[in-house]
Length: 112
Image: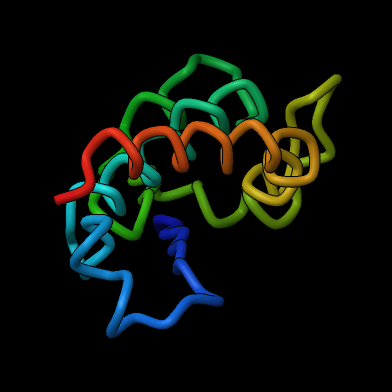
């Protein structure tokens, strides 16, 4: 069973901001956010052969780990060091300010 992690950008008035900053569904800013989340989560994903962290589909709004064992690893892996279960939450608790900063920079550079 694969695991799909979805990210939503909340806490803003969509009517005023979405188009101005490319935040529309499946827009470039959402794709940038998903790619940044994937890139940052990699060091938190359990690793044996590396297959789990390399068979991934990244789309605007989601990162899907495709391996059949992904869900089990996501919910039960005891981990070593940084790696282990709930790797998206681990990444966010450690790197959220950096992630927000990078997305903010992207949005400012790519606004219409």
